[in-house]
Length: 323
Image (tube, rainbow, N blue to C red):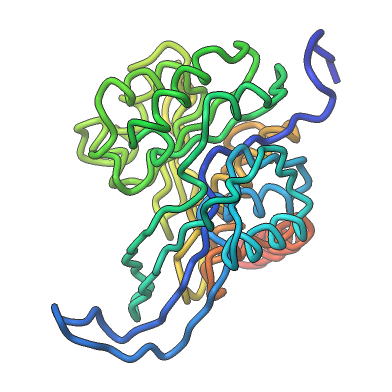
């Protein structure tokens, strides 16, 4: 291994994507306006940015939550969940607010609908970011929610642009990409090393008609941008700058709940890059982890590193047998 002066031996993942509590309800269909529907199951669990962080932590990387916790029952639940995964929480909590909550409605085809009420996680300050000791070699994961709302966006974008060039910035624009102010989007993408998005977001951002073309187009738009486009059961597309986009196949699985699957994919992909895997190999492991996660109910369902190893070994054996 070649050591680069000024870089840590073990990179860390700093996650700005906010932590809140998910109330997950499985329903037969969305209720009509002013109507009611009975849920067949319920789950109250820590969600939001916790999904990607827990995935990274379970795949052997040090993780830091670069966000604020609060005070109250939801904050207690989130704090305990972060502690169980050994995720560092260095920022001062907001003792005047509890953490926010997201109601997740899961239909039979595993599609999700969200209703979010923000809390302490939305009160990140410039002074908080200034306390983070992000070094060259570390990875920073940013969500579209971090750069969507004016109060938080200005602090986050300025901070990102001030990071060392040796810091890898990963950006997931999230489901409301159209709500991110154009100038914020331009500035964040200008500092992004890896754009991590789903197919719908990639098509919106690129104006292209398919994932391969979208990934290739976006990777050529900015000087240092690499792109990964998640395609659900079809796997993903990886476009490393100045190279042709590559489709990385997905895996057969039973789909129970897709909540947090993209976050699991992000967390495992970034972790494998930190472990020295090339982007295609990292993407294959992320595809495997996401396939395993959607077979379980709830958002933070990432498998551990050894589980991914076993899953891939079994898949390789099946391919060898069928071949």
